[in-house]
Length: 622
Image (cartoon, rainbow, N blue to C red):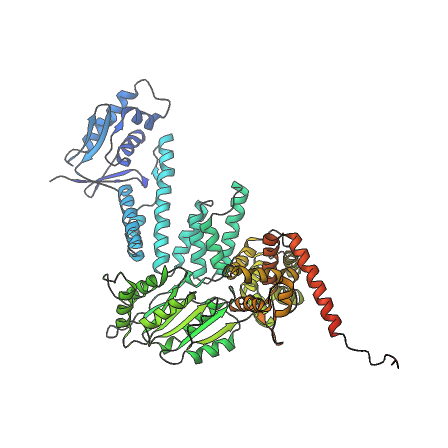
């Protein structure tokens, strides 16, 4: 019976015949053996073996010495079925029952990647656990020479990439542990310029409720990339940063709670809510009432960045006890259409592999699985009434909680909740929660000014709060001054965090048809406290009915709001006004903006003359 051979390259080079460890000879002989093992059965030329041992300074007797080492190694292989065979001017290690920790690591990585593609992240993590536990130590420790040094770097990098893959799988399948955080911190320290481990560490910290630390990890990486390479972070790292800043609920998925064996487990696939949630007590009360029975529908609408998703998730978590069979969530922006939503939900409900290919078939299967279940369906970022109609057909008795940037007129039975901006005390509460009570109490007036500059726009307030937290040496007053300057200059360079707010507001702007977009730019150019439909018509040069139509379209996506005075409107925040002003300068041009302001000045002057009351003390003429 032949003995099994096993090699280990992580740590000192070692070799076992079955369970017995066998000495592998001098350091130079170890280098030659390592060269044959690491290529996993491929031939290695004599010239390459000479460079492995002596690099560019071989002795005259190098060839003879190589043959001596090979002869000694062949004797170590006796009785194992393995051999070192000569092929022209090359040698190859093959045959027998060979294994090596390096080969096992590569195989485990390949297997884990396959499991990840098959949506089995827990299996992928398990596939790498054992092999990484056995791959410790400095690779080829004690083996001398330039070749061995390059292999040490290469093998350590392969091990770190495998560890990164394992941690990626872990974060897709389970909450991060303290050990996961330590492993990620080590990877970031080892490879400070590598962005993927940094993004994973940010994600893990965020999921542990350490949002500020996650953002600090980004700041340090951003600074390092600028200082060392004069480059900005890549798209993936920047995307992770933006998602953490805005509290993207898809970053945290609450795993299904274990149920007793005798009862079916509820289908709970609901993201966690924001770490810092303030205000919205009135809206939460309306949602509790609106979703109190089967078949009920509630729709949350509001400006992008107003906190629609955060409110929906907070309400869904509070109402969990009313839906014992579970809660399903989907973001229609990422789901690949309604067919993708139904496919995802069918899998969540245990439909198995035979999911129909057509939307109609999926509707029928979903309706069948929903029968008798009390489920809450949370549909985020709906844009099309057809999407909602199809979901109602698939689950007529389910309770639906929908968020949408615009009013969906074909859902007449819906209870509508429109989100406005934060009250000042709510804005201050969010700044305090993020930046710290001591910081805000130290500059209460400056904190209030900063909140007012954000106009109650929740995402804007959150970004401003993180700017305060991330700049401990800056006064809040200085941060507020900087924001005020940015909001007054349409050509000011935007900070990364400002770009997050601009991107959210731009999503609402991009939903507009050309005429409402033109009207918004005109309003942004003059920045009125309020404006009537008739004034819009004169300002832009439109018939009155077209002005009404454009204002209705802007109102549908919350880029303007109506006032207490009939047919009068205002911008919802300074931030929207700034977005509209920048768009006006960029699209219409500086001259057009100046002309618009001159026209507005003339309109307001005429209005003021009309509204000037008669003097009661003027002398009468007869």
